[in-house]
Length: 376
Image 1: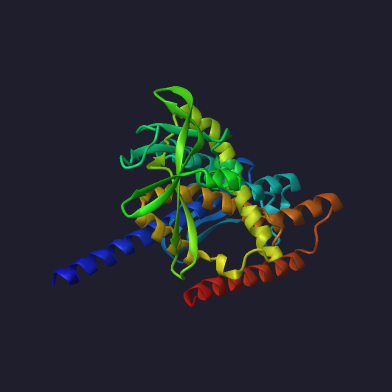
Image 2: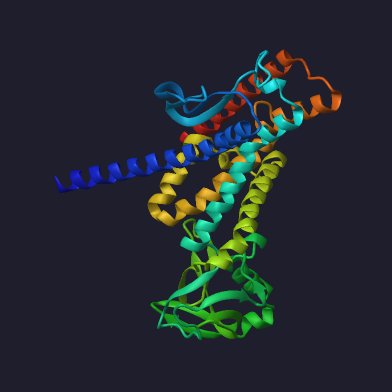
């Protein structure tokens, strides 16, 4: 009975995190659509409906402005429906009757709001949880080190720790060891702790912040070899202490939130490029269900992980939607730009067919990658 209750509690906890992940994804999509809505209202477009979710409406309210606000049963999307967006409408406030520059602003509104939200979420991450800069949490007394609890590690070998430049602490430690000459690697002190024999090198240069003052110290790097699951020997690096992310102060978070959001966006672009050039495979791509599963899994491990996902997903939506793929904002902006240059639109029906075909292909791809992940 105790086991059954524990299992039930575990299942309910998992379901709770899945629901949280769905709400996160829905929040991001709602922010995107609210970007279109806000710029549309500002520029005088006629808006017919703002919907959170797809499918059958479970809540509807007609606003005084005549717009319909609805919440629908499938929480995996949403939309802002403009009058005359996909068909002819004589109303001068209809979407396609507005000037091209106004339409471009409205079409870009979703991407803009997503990136702004990425900046806000990055600020929350930095000030509330920290991210890439390590702070000493606990020093292992069995290992010799010049570091103390609450020391903030700013640099390794004179290189600033910064996710934005790909200089994470782990990456810089690996670079430090890889750059050592064979002569340097041969000059070590052997230390055995808890039945593990380490090679100890006192050559790790760290720039730390201690009690508000910056100083440089030499720390020990402990190296040992351990067999992985398939029996292959793997070199492990250890520094004799554990760390937690350093929580930035207000000024630091303000100064870093924009570059960090831009870095997340850049990572998305790099990922897409690698996908196109074959650098990564379909196993590394996921649709909404895979995204929800991943968010739920990592959030259950540590709630701080959720706040890492927020700016990343926001930046992801911004970049993805700006791409000139039919049915996405980037493609609609391209058609509007062509119309502005030509002085007349491409046949509306042809454009509609292109966007519809793009939408079907996108749905098919999303469905395929999600089903694929179920069987790998």
